[in-house]
Each structure stands twice: as C-alpha cells, then as structure tokens.
Length: 502
Image (cartoon, rainbow, N blue to C red; front, side, top):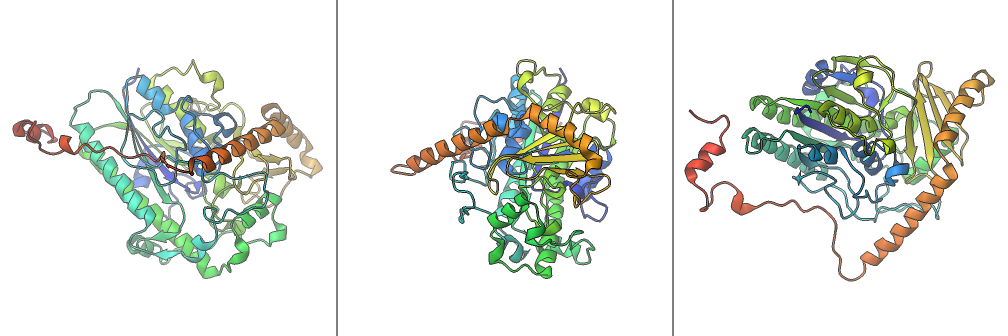
C-alpha cells in the first residue's frame, strides 16, 4: 500500500467553466495556477448533483443521490455508507476535516477521525423541500435574488469568518502533523464555503477586478417564457419577480465572485505554505461540489444541469499521474475510487454499489467507461431530473419536461436543443436507452416523496419540547494545550518545535 499523505481542497459553488486548463488566465489566483501547472487538470468534470449536500455526499461515497438517498440539503447521509475517509482510515490513515461538508443527521463525522470546525449550515431536516406542494417557496431558507442586488464590498461576513477559521485550523493541523506525534500517513480535507453567494468580498480582492473584462455574462438574460420548464421553476424558487436586477447588480455580483476566488487562493496558499515549510509531501486535490450560473441566460446559483452550474474544477497532483490537460468527461464521484487507487486500497467489498471510476487510467489516456451521470431532486424541482454527459453530448430527462440534447462542441452555451431534430434521432435514441437502463424515474420520484414526508414528520416532532441539535461541536481540550502542570516544560518546548533543535 502507498503511504502518501493526501491534502484535499474543496470549495463551494465554483464554476468549472472558469477552469478550462487550471484557473482562467485573467483570474488572480497565483497559488492555484502554480498547483495546476504541476497537476492533471480535468477540464470537463461534473458534479453528481448541482446542490451542496447531495453533491458532497456523492463525492465522498462515489455514489449518486438515488443510492445515497441524500436528495437535497436536508436529507440524512446514512452512517453505513462508506466514504473515502472510512476507506483511508480503515487502511491506517489519520483522517481529518477542517470546514464544511454539509452532513445532515446525527453522524457528523462520516469516517473522519477528527473534525476541527463546526459546519456552516444546519445538520437537521429543516431545509426539506416538499413535492406535495409544487410551487411553494419556503422563504426563510430558499435562495432569492437579494444575493445579487446586495452584492459588494465588506471586510467581514458570516462566510469570511467561517473560511478564515477553516484556513487557520487547517494550517495549524499541518504544523501539528509535521511534529511527527503520529506516524500514520494522513488525509486532511480543507473545505471552504466561498465563492458561494452572497456575493460579498473584501476590498483588497475586489480591487483586483476593477478593470475586469468578464463582468457581464456571455449569454444575456432570456425572457422567462424562452426558458425551459426547469429553468422557469428555478426563477420562481428564487423569487425573481420581487427583484429588479440591473446591469450594475450583475457586474458587482460577478466581480465579488471573482474576488472571492482570489480570497480562496490566498487561503489555500496559507495551507500550502505550511506544507512546504514543514517539508511534508502529499497528493493534492482541488475541486468543487458544484458551480454557479453567474447570470448566464439570467440564471444564478446552481440547481441546473447547464454547464455553469454542473461543471466543476478538478485538479490532481500525485506521483504517477502525468501533469497535463484531460478533456474526457469525468465526475467528482470518481474521486473516492481514485484516492483508494492511489493509496493501494481495495474497495472490492463495496465496489458493486459504487458508481464512480478511478481516474488514474483516464489521466493515462484511457477513456472513462460510459457516460457521466447526474441527478437532481431538490428545491425548484417537482420530480427528479437526470442527465448524461458523454463525448460532445449532454442529455437531460425529467418526466415533467421535454428532453434536452446539446452538442457542447458546437454549442457550448447550450442554446440549441437538438432533441426534436431528426438529424440526431439516433443519438437521442442511444441516450434514451442509457437513461432507461439506469433509472426508473417513477420509482426514483416515489423514493424522494417518501423521504421528504418522513423527514417533515420527524423534524416537526423534534422541534417540540426539549431540542438537542445535531450540529457538530468542535472539541478543544484546554488542559492538553500549550503548557500545563502534568507536562514537562522541556518536553513541550522541544516537542512542539519544527524543525527541532540540535
């Protein structure tokens, strides 16, 4: 078994189209550009589901939401589903998480031996959508366009406070690992909440994009009636009629979003500097859970299979993987199998139930087997949507909507639906057959409805009387920190130093 240390950087809602071959040239991201230059860069990586909790549970387990049952941002991630943290820990790794993973349910660890921060979002069932009430907006937690109209500069925010803490604890952990108190190899996951909306950035990063030429979308807003039915549902869920979005709002939102990529670059740089300064080596991954439409065609945030929402960056720096660009479509559910492959860990006991594939062969020029699959069954949907991406093609299906078929090579902005064009009838028939072999959409819908109904009952019950939250409480043992009277001062000063003195 390989004993390489593993460092995973996960960010939230980062649009993969901004990473055509590492960060776009015009982005101010020197640390990510340096990392990308020595890494395998997957230009066409997709989320398993364009929403935080479903995308993350799938990324960690190598399974789609229809198997994890994490359909939305309030669905429990079951404790009996192995994650990459379980596989690595079982094989002898230290596993640690600093930051967000949006675990819902009483298990807030999912294989991590140590967790350094709490999460930024609630761990209970309060954000459960309800297919029994199509069109209902749950105002207190649904997205709305206030993130766009309120975009601008701030020196501190809820999210900045969180990511500052994530970087601090991750950097401190890197130094602690260097002290060598535990000889096991380690896997540290550092998971930030930026550049997720609201679109608010510190002035030092905001100023970097004063003359940016990319502050307007390439595809301007479409009329509501010109959108497909699911995009219309997203507009309705986001309460678009209550807001008047100006061109200046769009520019400020995108500027703040780009600024927060630079903010993240600094935070990631802090962790990488600690790694380099302590002369530790590690496999390094950088990826996101899903993207952000950033005003393209008038859409914002995620919840859609369009490229801005569904495509994510994926960068892997590891021995045995050649640096360079891979254009073959892949998925972030491939990460778990890739990590186990890199570490020499067999997943044979659970592999029949995993849907990802190791990316080591793909990085070596071998095509990924079959299409990349995506699912969505959360807010702004009234029935599950599914999607297949293979070659130049993307196919989307929902029992409520007309099928969509796009050729991304000819139509990268997905403006021409070819599903009704007889020229492509054979392509459509092939994707239909693949989708029908993979999914029973009526059964999928029934599973989602059952899950939602159960959770509404449980949530309402648990909010009555005594309330015991599931949110993770970081443990800090004050009597084991710094210098205490059960310790030898000489040992403390020598043991906590890196490198140690002569």
